[in-house]
Image 1 (cartoon, one colour):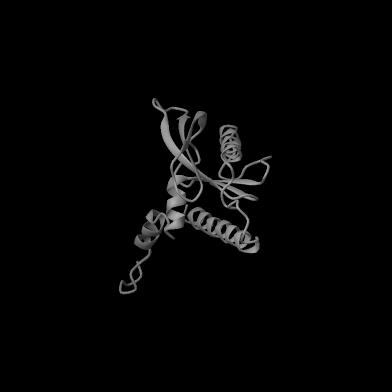
Image 2: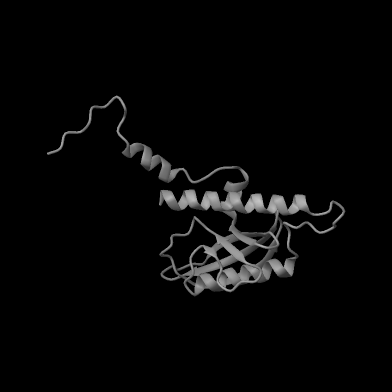
Length: 163
């Protein structure tokens, strides 16, 4: 799991670097923000990501999506199957198009309200809002790191004897 969190963090940083490079390479007088797709395009990308998830695709590149789209979600367990979803609509948010959804998972009695942030032009990214907020604050899920730290012996401890 530690490797997955590190890969997700590295991938998100790479995506942001690409977006910043794209923004820096464009002419300054361009009225459209390259990191902000229009509302209809963003909704189509979210829909494509959720359809792929429902069909069993994991996080990462969304198969067949145009423009290339990546779904970033480290908060939903990989074994949790999406049965159906509802896109409730665009909601207020900064730095991207934010959407409210209701996700219905196999074995769950109630739908889960989840917000997603869609940004980028080509490639496009569909972030679960928790992952997006961690990324923009240069943060990451520390739970795996904490477990790894507690598993390491202290440098002051003598090595454990083998039975």
